[in-house]
Length: 111
Image 1 (tube, rainbow, N blue to C red):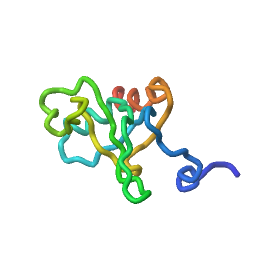
Image 2 (spheres, one colour):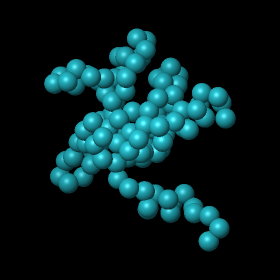
Image 3 (spheres, rainbow, N blue to C red):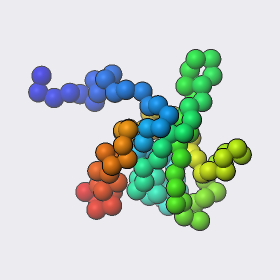
Image 4 (cartoon, helix red, strand yellow):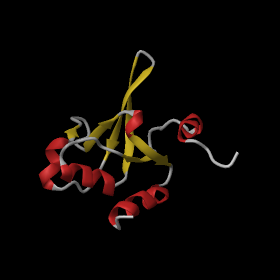
């Protein structure tokens, strides 16, 4: 086998867990929000499950600009800025934040 097809990669990728760092894609029409999500790595702080199915992952971001803060929800217990994502919105995940630096660098330098 010379290469692995993308649908085969999904089979072997592990499931995200609390504490993992993630690089996500956001299908929002707001350009500033999309640029922020593409330029930053988030951390999974919670997984919402209903009837043994994962509904969404709660991803935490820091240093959010004032003009897009309204697009993030605030958790009443922790007062932190979070965004919800389904598993298909998670592009890559890693245990260490530095492992995902390549994705933010690609966006930063327009590669």
